[in-house]
Structures are given as structure tokens and as C-alpha cells.
Length: 472
Image 1 (tube, rainbow, N blue to C red):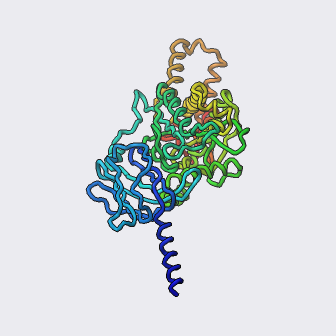
Image 2 (image 1 turned 60 degrees about the vertical axis):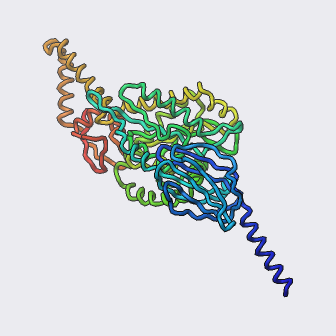
Image 3 (image 1 turned 135 degrees about the vertical axis):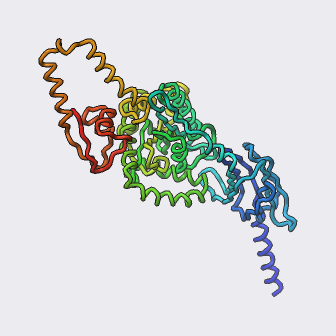
């Protein structure tokens, strides 16, 4: 009997000792414009408790770690003043104290091993002061004489604790996407009538589902997300462009891309993925909204132009726009595309993607496609649309001054009369599902500005069943 008790006591002791044998390997600090994430890398799952914040000090009690060491620390944030650790008075467990320079909203959660990461305890700190400053930032649309600038949001994929794909020689996707995005931004900002904004401006993470929110806050006309692909087959190479599908992807590559985005969200935190399930309900409610229909159609048209330009500077893995259900593309009111600039998993393409000259070629190709699209189909209130609408008027006035009516040939007079009659008695088009104003303008070879003014439209949105008059 005594032996049995001794064995039980030893078992309890060993169990307690094993539970308390975990330790902190390292601490990583990841700042972003409106928040900071602190990641504690652990040797095992943390048994923790988040205590009430006191005097700008966030406290985490971890019962199964006894070592007061924080290990290697990396990163810094102006929100965090200091991180301290001490043993609990009971001798079982430690107390983590994160001292802040100003009040913040805290949230803690643990993450299981994933990819190259082990167990992690994550502390997210939302900075209300920074949030207010961002919210107070004026919208970037600037009114020019005769119209506003066209705003293009550029989204550099991944970032921060999420490096994205990693090439055979150690190239991080997040660095490639940011470099190409910055080059694209410079090209756009140097073009009259255009303005570029970035969803992220340095190495920090934004959830895929929140990137459209950043674009919306900047009143963007288009969201362009830049990525680099990766697969196990290192021979795969070439670029592709993706648009939103309201169904799951049918191709293997599409399903892999969806899985990659989910993987990226899991690196960010399970709590956010669960919370964002509400966005699916929101999306389901807005799918029937005509703005989603317009955004998807426009995105497809832009994708085709981007592929045409990219084919001049790199091999295309897919020559037609591909469709997948991706959170970064799900803004119902903003046309969006996702560009895979190449396969970073291919050694030769990895070398090209980290080359400044190739990055510039890719950025230039995308810029040319975007410029051509908006020159052909500018937003109604943009400076580009006003300039486009005025050009034929000036030309016509000049013709009338230099060519008197009495010198016109009978055939020219008849042609003018026929043109006038066709406008008086225009063709009628009833809008069907999937159609957009820009698409109808191309179909009937009529400038969008003419379609707009002729039908007295104040925006580019058209409704299913709407009757439009199409002048010859």
C-alpha cells in the first residue's frame, strides 16, 4: 500500500514537473500603424491568464513556465516601453509585464505549431491614439480643375510575422511584393490624374480580409494586390492574375491559393479567422448588390489588360484571368485583382523576382495596363473623364470654325443629318446580369462619357433591367 502511494506521488510530481518544464525561447515585436503584436515563442503550449491592465502595464500569468528568461528579443515599437518577467510568489509560474507608453486595448491568444513556427503566445495591442490619427487623415482624392484624381490602392502581400512563400535561396515573398509595390506607386504618382496609396508601407502584417478596408478608407477606385506564387514543383514558372469567384476555385492552383490565404490568416491568429466568419454573412447579403456585379466585371476587364502587358516582360503561367474565393478581393464596392508576379519557388524566377530591373519591368507592365484601362473607362467624376469628354467638343468647335457649312459637300451634309437622326432615334439596350457601363461602351464603340451624358448618369453603376439609349 505504501509503495502504491509512493508511485502515485511520484506520478503527480513528474506530471507537475513536466508541465512546468516549458520555457520562452524568444520574443518578437511586430509594429504596424495602428497596433503592435508581441509573439512569445514557447517550447510548449502556454497555460496563461490575461490580467486586468493597471497603469499602462499589461500582465500575463503563465502557470507552466518557471524560467524568468525571455530569450532572444527582436523588433521594437513606440507603443512598448519595456517587457519584464518575474517568478510568481508561489514559485509556480511566471508573470509577464508589458509596460506601455500609452493606454492600449489588449487581446491574448495561443497558437499551435504551424509551418516553421512552434507554440506561440500572442499579445495584440491596439493603439487608440494611432487609430484616431489614421481615421482623421483626409482622403487622398484631390480635386483638380475639372475632376478628381483616380485612386489606386496597392496591396503588398503578406508582411510582418507572415513572410509568405520563401524561395530556395531564402528570398521572402513579403520583401519582393513590397519592392514591386513601391515601384508601381512611384509610376502611378508621376502620372497626371492618378494617385497611388499603399495598404502597408513597411514590414508589418494586415489580415487579408482587412486590406479592402484600408483601400475603402482611401476611397480607392481599384485594389491591386501583389504576390509571388510557390508550389512544390520547382519547374513551375510564370505570372498570373486572379479575380474574385463567389464559388470555391475549380483549379488545383486556385484551391492552393485559397489555402495559402487561410494559412496566412492562421499565422495572424485563430481568433481573427473565427471573428471574420461574420464577413461571409455580410458578403452573402451584398452579393446581389449591383456594386458587387460591377466590381467583379471591372476586375475581370482590368485583369485581361494586365495579362496582356505582363506577357511582354515575363512568361505567363495562365494566359486568362483565374478565379478564386479570396478575402483580399471581396470588397463589394471596389474592383480588385490579385497579381502573382511569378513562382518564387522556381530558382531562376526567384533570382529574377529579387532583381531590381525585373521588379521595375513588372511594375511598368502593371502600370501601363491600369493607365490604359482608366483612359478607356475613367470614373465619371474624374479629371481624366472630364478631359476625355472635352476633347471631341474642342475638335468639333475647331472644325466648325475652319470649315464653313456652305463649303461642305452634299455627302458630308447627308452624313451629319443621318448622325443626328440616329441620336434622336437611338438604339435601346436593356442591362443584363454581368454587364457594366465600361463593357457596353466597348461593345457599342461609344465613349463612356457619351453614354453617361446621353443617359444622364451621375455614376458608372448600372442596374439589371435598366434601359439605356445607345447613340450611333
